[in-house]
Image 1: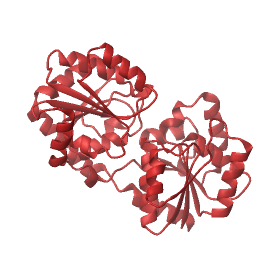
Image 2: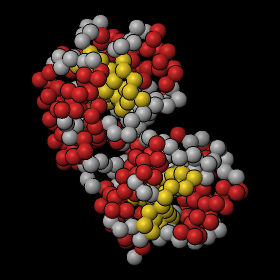
Image 3: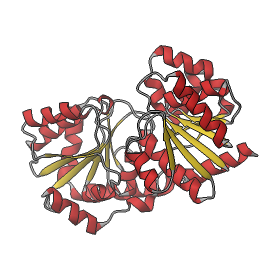
Image 4: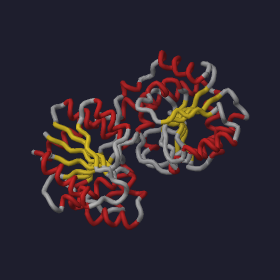
Length: 364
C-alpha cells in the first residue's frame, strides 16, 4: 500500500504529531509512505526525515500559487498513492482542488480547526466535501460539527478518537527526579504543567491569573509551560509584570514531553476551544489529575471530582480554588491520578490499527 500524507504544517502540534505517529505505524506495517507539508518543514517533519521518510514541501506562504498546485498534482501522479490522506483545512482544500484534475482516493481529517475558519472558507469546505471518499473525525465534537454544521454525510464520517502510546508516557520516577532537579524544585513542591501551543485559544492568561491567586495561599508551587507559539512574547511580558518570574517555567517546544509529565503533579489546560487534546491523553497515561475546561470531548475523558476538575472557560476564580485544593491535598492528587490512569486504560484505543483497517477496506 502506498500512502501520501498531505498536511498544512509540520510544526509541533496535536494534528502534526498524530500524523507522524500514524505515518510511522504504517511504515512499520509495510506501507510505502511519503509526507508533504504545504508550508516549510517544521520540527515534526525534521524528525520524520531523520527516520528515513521522504518529506516534500510546497513552501506555501498563504494562498497557493498555480506552480504549487501543479507540484502537488505532479507528486500525486508520479508517486501514484493508493490513498492520499489530507489533514487540516488548507491541505484538505488544496487536495480537493487537485482531485478535480486527476483521479485518486482522497480521505481527510479536518480536525476541529474547521470550526475556527471564516464563514467563506467553511462554505468552500461544504461545497467541495463530496470529493472525499471518507472523513475521519478525531473526536465526537468534530464529528458532530462536520455532520451538523458542514452537512457531511453521516455515512462518510468515521469517528476515530485521538489516541496515544500509553507505555511511552508511563510515570518514570528516575526522569521525575532528573527534571525536578533541572527546574530547581524540591519533592515537597507542587508542580502544575500545561502542555499546549502558546496561542490565543489556549487562554493561558486565565491560567496565570488563577495561579497567581493560588500562590498567595500556597507559595510552594510552580507552573511549567511546554509549548511555543505566537503568544510567547505576550506571555513573557505578563510573567515579568506580575512577579511570576521563577514561578512560571517556560520550556518551549519539545518533541518528547514524557519526562516533563513525570516531573509534574497536576495537568492543567485552560483552553477556550478544544477537540480532544493529545496532551490531556498523555497526562492521563502519566497518572496525573487534570484541571481542564468544559470544551470539546474533554468532559468525556475527565470525570469531574474523580480524575480531576472541570471548569468553565475563563473562570480563573474557580480554577484558582481547584488548583489550591490539589496543591495542598497530596492524597487527593494521588487518588485522582490513579483514576485518570484507569480511564486511560479503559478508553484509549489503538487508533493506528483502526486507521490501517480503514485504509485496507478502502483499497479493497
